Image (cartoon, rainbow, N blue to C red):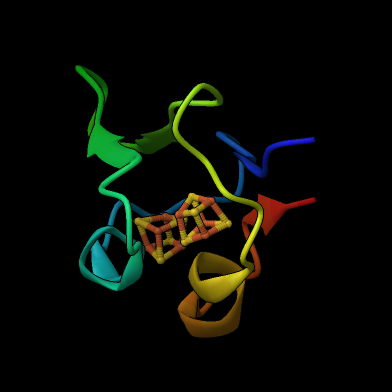
Length: 57
Ligand code: SF4
Ligand code: SF4
């Protein structure tokens, strides 16, 4: 089960992108960030650094 980012909550700060050990996080056309479920290891690092708690298990 991969993490996913709540698009409504994400403020597009990019903090989580640098924390992901497998580079599963990227910015989308709308400026919000998204997680590739094929790459996500479910480590929770993104959730730990997000200021608005947007990544959810
Ligand atoms: S849970 Fe871990 S592996 Fe998955 S997107 Fe977040 S930081 Fe990356
Ligand atoms: S750290 Fe949170 S608010 Fe910032 S880009 Fe990632 S999910 Fe969005």
